[in-house]
Structure formats: structure tokens, C-alpha cells
Image (cartoon, rainbow, N blue to C red; front, side, top):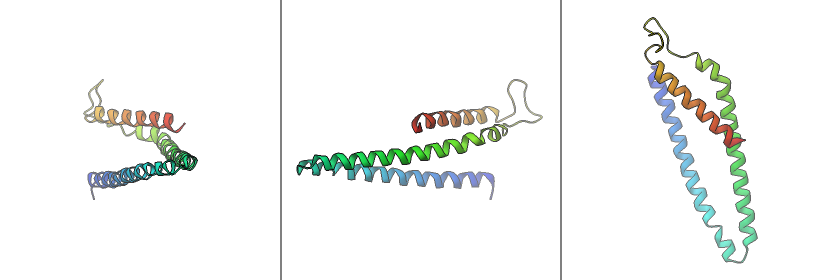
Amino acid sequence: MTETDTAKELRQAIARHLAELHRLHIQLATDSRSLKALTLEGRPQAEIEIAAEMLEQYMAATGAFLENMRGRYEARLALLRRGDPAGPEAVPGQGAPGHGAFWYAFSRLTGALRMAERRSG
């Protein structure tokens, strides 16, 4: 299996998981809409308690996931940074072929890590 095949398979697996997560979000939103029946039945406190529990648990789980991923990739940044393409074909001031694409991807990752830090903290 080539590096390209491995990256493609990993990307597809993550895309499947994200699609499943999206489906779960839709289901959770649908289920949460049904909570209004409690208020219509004269039990608004039950709706309030369930809604608060749902939001608290979701935010805790999401925050824990973001913090875990942020820590994992921040710990790898130095190693990842060393992957900058270099070689005899490097042009002074421009780097080797692929240098720009590498640093664009690296910047995306560090930007995502900063967003994860703001959201998990």
C-alpha cells in the first residue's frame, strides 16, 4: 500500500466518522425538539432539567475530545515541522517543491489547534 493510499483510506475513515457524528447531531436535535411536549403537558421544569443535562454533557464530552486532540497534536508539532520538504532543488528564499503547500497545511493545523484551545477552555 502506498503512502497516498494510506492517507486516502485514513481520510475516508475520518470522513465516515464525521458523517456519523453529523447524523447523531441531527438525531440529538430532533430528540431535543420533542422536549417541548413536557412544557405543553405543564412540566416545564422537566424540560429545563433534561435540556441542561443534555447541554452540559455534550459540552463536557466535546471539550474533553478537543482538549485530547489539541494536546496530541501540539505535542507532535515539532516533529511535524521537521517534515518540511528540503533538498538540493530548493531555491533560496522559496524552499523546495512542496514547501509552500507544506507550510499552508501546517498553518491550517496550528489555526485549528488555536480554535480548539478557545473552544475547549
